Length: 111
Length: 113
Image 1: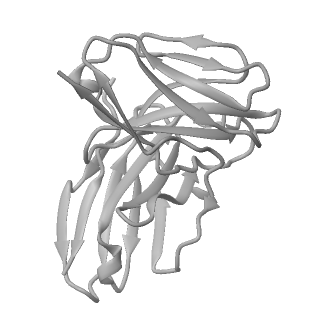
Image 2: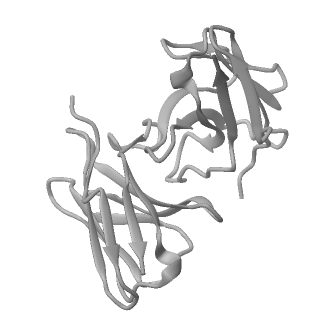
């Protein structure tokens, strides 16, 4: 079972920041937080991952709370092409554990 | 660098038939994983191959099998197809170790009639 909780859906105005929350209150010390997104009927796309420090790349920023029980994915300037289902996944960085996907958050970016 | 490719992209089969799907990983990637996505169950892990050996397996019946070739390309086979096998089958590759990021292909849409 997925170890994360996400809101089922969110709306965001085009050009504004999209802040997608994720709760992972049972996360272990050796588990990372990963974010993927899936645009309709395409394969999931990797966005970003982190352990405990905030991370930023060309796509997004990941903010992890100090107690690591929750995180927020930030898309700084959402566009219509960011409309997708966003998955938050916690996963150990060792061993051969697969990605376990929950239901994700369906983000709709509105013009 | 080219991404993960999957063939065919769409497939229609009838109950009882078998099907083989193909996945070519990103160049240099040695691990290939397969996932099934359905509206009811979401994305579920099938199995992972590394260096031609299955090193992890999900909770699917034995009708689902796979293999990996020496060039890291992988195939998955589903025998005795059932209506419930209709799904998007996704392949993901990564360099080698569990610390590497997985990159997904576009998927194969299988419809069983």
